Amino acid sequence: MTNRVALLLGLALVLLVLADWALNESETLIFLGRELLGLVRWLAFWR
Image 1 (cartoon, rainbow, N blue to C red):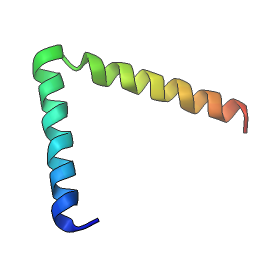
Image 2: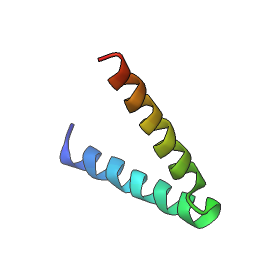
Image 3: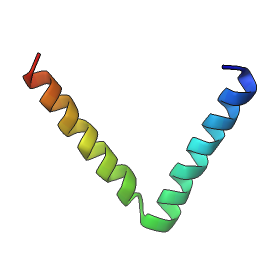
Image 4: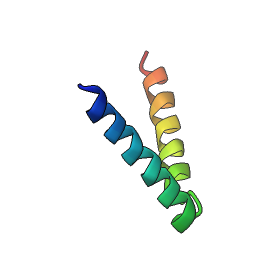
């Protein structure tokens, strides 16, 4: 991955987070965080 591609991906990620915060009051980020936490707990169970 070149620096330019990494910069574009990082910029896209920041823009998506800002758009979610502005348009949905971060509901999507909260949902994804909760689902990720559930996945981590599920994986820890099977460890």
